[in-house]
Image (cartoon, rainbow, N blue to C red; front, side, top):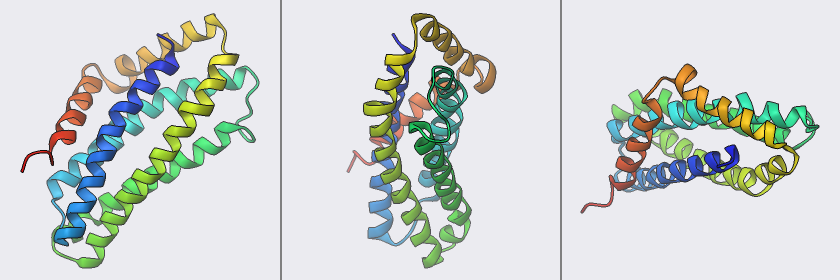
Length: 185
């Protein structure tokens, strides 16, 4: 499997949690309250899986590999991706920072948590679409077999050396739990 196929699979895991975040935002809208535990689990997933595990592979390895093959960081598709990564981090940080006030019932903080979750969901859905249909297609065209092999090895090392063994699996399990959290009556 090519590294971009692995990353596309990770997108499917992220989509499960984006759906859960959208349902949580609807629940917040209906109740005008947040479930701090539920939002905390979403924030944990987005920070540690979507950002730390996934983006370490994306930014840390794929972007560098395709840059070596002539993609410009400043003017090409990567220049679009990096600010979106930063905006996603900002949205999740904002949701997390408002959780204490929102848990205490502050209506403005409740609204802010909901709005940041929804903005993050919309941003990431569009971002993933661009990666899957543009960036990864371009990457697969320019990366040699040797590049692909080196990238695959680097992607595997992220979990072993940067994230920690078992962490990736833990977040896959959390994604499946979150995807089912609102399924029961």
